[in-house]
Amino acid sequence: MPDDAADPDLRERIARGLAGLVPHNRALGLRLAELGPGTVTMVLPYAAELVGNPATGVLAGGAITALLDATCGSSVFAKLAVRMPIATLDLRIDYLRPARPGLDVHASAECFKVARHVAFVRARAFHPGAEDDLVAVANGTFMLFRDKAFGDKAR
Amino acid sequence: MPDDAADPDLRERIARGLAGLVPHNRALGLRLAELGPGTVTMVLPYAAELVGNPATGVLAGGAITALLDATCGSSVFAKLAVRMPIATLDLRIDYLRPARPGLDVHASAECFKVARHVAFVRARAFHPGAEDDLVAVANGTFMLFRDKAFGDKAR
Amino acid sequence: MPDDAADPDLRERIARGLAGLVPHNRALGLRLAELGPGTVTMVLPYAAELVGNPATGVLAGGAITALLDATCGSSVFAKLAVRMPIATLDLRIDYLRPARPGLDVHASAECFKVARHVAFVRARAFHPGAEDDLVAVANGTFMLFRDKAFGDKAR
Amino acid sequence: MPDDAADPDLRERIARGLAGLVPHNRALGLRLAELGPGTVTMVLPYAAELVGNPATGVLAGGAITALLDATCGSSVFAKLAVRMPIATLDLRIDYLRPARPGLDVHASAECFKVARHVAFVRARAFHPGAEDDLVAVANGTFMLFRDKAFGDKAR
Image (cartoon, chains in turn cyan, brown, purple, yellow):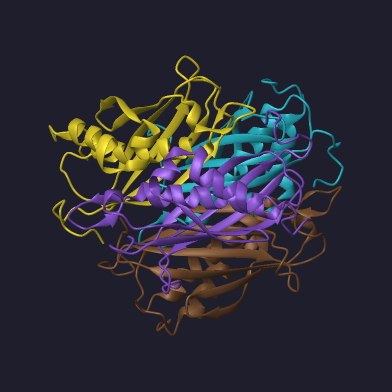
């Protein structure tokens, strides 16, 4: 299975996707921090407007969900040597502890298995420097459409 | 277990939450369509700027994720007779088919079980008039903090 | 998509699978109760030897897991018009309440969506007569190997 | 949070649970291989009678499910310093590849987070010597009943 991201435009495409195409990720201020072969780290900057409960200052759970969702999908593109359409089959998130007020949340996703039709991803959200006290973990599976050019209709 | 939403301000709080506090839901244009005792329906209006792949016109998966996430959490508040802090424990989404280009997506969530510490939710996303051809389904569990006032720190 | 179980031997194959091939299902005493087009109901008979905690008489959670697992997979075969190999992609179970001591547990699974490569299943476990007070719910996805005869190696 | 298994009888209780109380685990031949503070490894010995499809010799998926289910629950007991009732809240399994015919399957579970009411577990199933080519991964959450003696009724 391909283990390297041969697509030279991947970083630019992911960054552009974050910055431009999906308004809710742009609204969250998500940005790409690291990109490896099958791995992606994104940052959700702490912002008062993302707080769910003003009494606690804790980021809304939905912001963590969106962060992990974006990171998981990007890691599949970072794993595939050839560009192809993908579609999320399922995504599961466990929320382990509330994010700490005032701190950014990072999410690292790894596409750890690619089969013929399906890719498997795991991810974790954490505060930098506190990787052992995870905020959330996620698992996802993605359909791969190997026989379609990227512009084709998936499914 | 309480089956009615005794909190008279619930609709206003949910609507305000959608419109104001969480920028990424506001960016998606999410709006509350129906609110019952333990049930919530929200609408994700189709918008060109939410399209993931311009060649297909299909809404980005992340928009469906955010729609279901917001709907699930709100259904717990709609089920509880007393206002209390909640926290998402886990959320799982199966994506059954791509959303149809040009059509709004609705999501209906039902909080179908409330135990002492945990509430269980299921939800479905669909195009109005095509409830049998679901776009996605979700299941979630939520911690309940019965002994805390809403402004207290949860967990 | 095929909605009927054209395979005339399906009931016999499922029953034989329960009774013969998989010793742990046989050890649990699982038996097939109902078989429809895409739906299956199985019974886990209450038995003292399946109790996890003698002080409570509650069935071990693992018995409920095995019941739901067996029911979900069978519902895919019950949905497909043509016999083909399948493989579980993922299975998720929410345990809503302990089973009641002394009572059988039934599980009904429905294969509610069949796409080209993937089938989606949902299931619920309950005591007969108390379908509104579910013991557990499950969701599963299954890979379909349409191009292989059943005896071929899957994947 | 407690990180050591202070209960001196834990190994015996887990072994006894595997060997005696739950007939379907006994039918599978599950045995305890390693027990650490919050970690458990169990073995599912390859056996012809556990094969789902005779043409391939691949173990039935249900055997892998039962292996992971048993391992996850045991890891919570291995993590808690004090014996208390627990109940599975949810369990999710991704099946990454078919088990190889003729080989035992090992499952290692780690209870990696204990909060007041909930414990979080992750597990992986693999063939010894091939830990990088996982057969399946699992995530589970468990309710903790700290205020109850073990013989009390949970929930």
